[in-house]
Length: 239
Image (cartoon, rainbow, N blue to C red; front, side, top):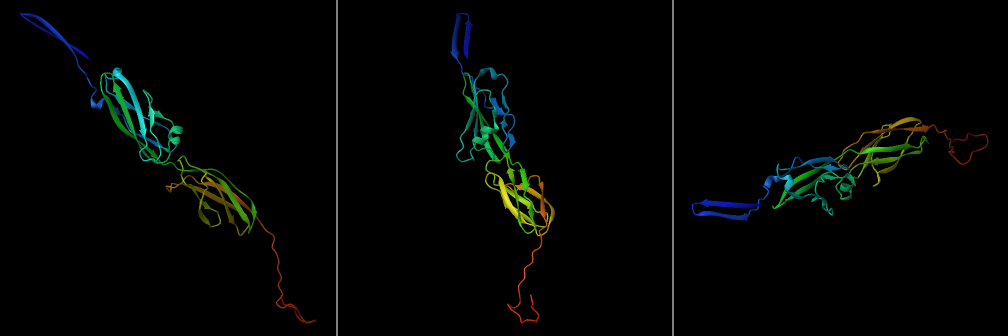
């Protein structure tokens, strides 16, 4: 800013001008609130600028600093952009439960850069059963339960808790891509209701999904074994 000073007395008048730098106060920029999202979701931030200073803005930048994620790089937004999409966060490794630091910086015309710090918290979300199928089988033979689990978290190790409907329960691992192919042997025929519950690596359980195993009756078989390899004519032969 330019300042002019005029002096007047009985001897005359004098004037002088000079430049004064008016800096923005430390609280010129602040986060209205920190952001909390779920795994796999995008994040938006609300930033407040002190009244009267918005017209003096030269630049505003928002930087996401994933300090607790090895290998992740800062994501930067320029003037007026305060949203990070879900795909951007996932590409930068920010798609599992945890936290990141958010830094906003504003440069005002004729003044220094002012910064403010906020945070992004990513909460765990429960996994789900995408699909499942049971192959029919006869009693005494193995039936196969196949399907897919999904979780919005990046790299979550998934498991499935299976209630086979005949009193047997198991906790089994899904493949890294969420698919599963597990077997079970039913000792009797009938229709058995199976419950599949997805479990993530934080032990959070999703909604159970049901399937029905149709087990067919198997014809009995007869196996004869003689007690002795031979017998005398007219005598009893034991089996």
